[in-house]
Image (tube, rainbow over all chains, first blue to last red; front, side, top):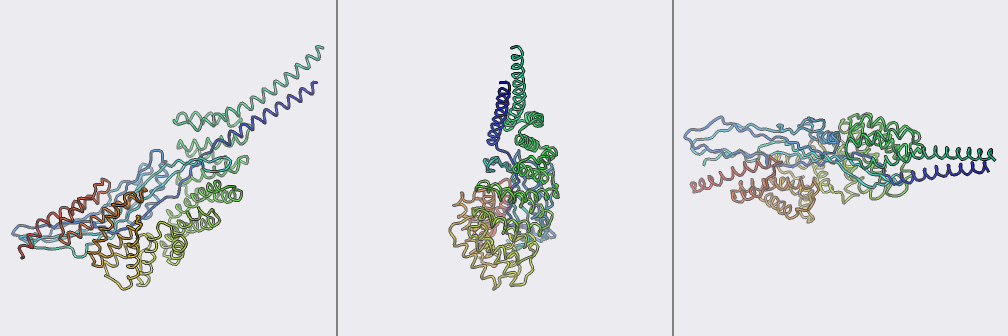
Length: 199
Length: 416
């Protein structure tokens, strides 16, 4: 009798332990696990010719010519780099690093706040032209064109909810950082300019 | 009789004791499981800290090994989310090297460690962990059952390959980056058809760009040819064809070009050449490709970009009237297709093409003494506070056209 009771209680113990284990395994199989991945950085680089600067026509109405006048034309580079609030700063920094490779010859990578490519209204292309205006209606007009190099980049940290049994993706949450870069190169005077008129 | 009663009591006591112990053990696991579940709902930093502490306390006494490794992994994830990379790293390294962890948890942990190393800027360590991760993915791929699990592994694989290649690119190691993409092509040749179509052209494009950057024109041609021949739906295909023609032109002329920024600059380099040297006989093939692209009706961003290059090409060779018509076409087509290509990148490029087409058209109109028309184009440019260049240039041109409109006709009358 005593042995039977002991055996019975032993069975109950093992069964309850096994049942509890099964229950835990079942619960765990319903509980997805999360994984973070940095998606491949998406960059689109586009280079196009654009009209860059239009100067004048400047007209001299006086009876004396004006000499040694100077026109300075400046094409600044711009960087617009942002991140969503929850996007980790390091993901945004990685984006800045990757995008900057395309512009390294003309635009330095200047990081502040640990991630942000500084909004740099930095000089990229400029041209100094000296001109003369003749007396009584002397006119001078100039036009520059340049290559505009645009980079549009996006880095995404994706939080994947992965099914623990089938390893299938149940849900994805994306945290993004974006960068828009404008850089001018190859600035030149448009064919046919500067135009000198007598108005 | 009393002795028998005593014996039975002892048995019951023993049973009760064992049941109590069993319950205590199971109860700990149950508590741990409920805290683990709760951890998915926490939102605030304080809640997170409290849950991490609780999980750490319960984890050590867990009897269920799977539960234990899941809790350890969860602690690592929560530390990562709270920005505590060092502690998260330590926690996850412990799981990855723990023999008890399941292969899935091990895979997930190695992935997280690689991401942490990369995010901390530890490139050498990140590369090592990505290597380990890729090895584990290749092993897991052999046992993977079902498309969904395969998709997950492919996603993990592509992010690892790109991460490695991006690190190498930033380190100016183009050859190493190229090798990563080449290995990925081998991986995807055995992949699901959908993945093959999605990833192989992108990988070939990256390889061809890297090849060009290091001056390997043969390599560039080899991989761009794969896309041109086998992936007609690839979105950059029309541009790639143009870029290939430009390379061929420069080769035929034996002109040395700077390819360090890849192929996207080739059309503007061609236009610069034409601006400086003038028209050339060998340009016929490129011009007929331009014309062919302009005839296509299903306009999209890349076709507008080609048209825009063509308009500048015509402008450069002195055919300004035709260039003006093309700019007009681009303006009206983009205005008609406002919904097309409205993903962030597409619409950004589209807006620039539209604005600069209007500016150039206004300039051409001014040069052709059509001042009113020019001013109308300028008036149609929408103010974008972000794009200061467009706004400033539009102002400069407006002033210029106003002066010309006021002054030049008087001058012409005087002449008459």
